[in-house]
Image (cartoon, rainbow, N blue to C red; front, top):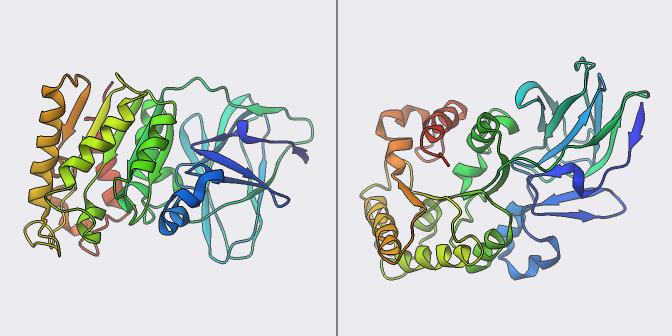
Length: 324
């Protein structure tokens, strides 16, 4: 097999690519500004949820070399937006090999793990095959959220709900789902503001609830501020605000700062109403209970995070809501 020289142009879904002697590391924040963000957020931003190595090739086999990790991680082979194969690298393994690809020219996406950091060391294809980065010609979708957007418990990287939706719609996904770290920070708003986007979704609230990070005085204001920063460069981009999905022990039980999910959903709806009253014309509020309500409690094994089937349900419901 021949080694293909790759650079940042071969990656989709990364905010930045850090280059080192080891290889190329995708980040979901600007890697040269990490000290501006909370350390726990940086840790999650280093995990490659939604990141793909994307290219066109007529190769019948593809080999991805990555730096060793200390846990098992999964990679998905997607051809023309269809999931074809999943490989699991055991802890310490470095080579992910996909075979029996069609010999015709096609689009290939290798989805990197949604629950670990991945450093790409090399990409190899058949000796006589050609390969080039996939053209940047799809509508761009930026999806901000929590662990329920990062989807660590999804069956594989291409089966997170954002990946399912993006593949179904033919969108170029940048997943900014940060497990435990979706706290509406202004610096994250600036990152979203500065990214190219044709559609933006914000799934907010559950980490604020669990982390007691905002109260009734600050929550609505933080939402309005977050959206206002994003709107500085995305004045007319369709924006969808999703409130939390069902979570039985947080619906009406107050957290340490007096918030419940019932209260949060009302505050989020009111934030949207206020922004619309000031001229906002391309924003949609979506109640999280319409996406994943009490009827699906059996798909919440810990009463907080959906299982793999739960993420498929979320994807199916969001497909009908996220229209541009």
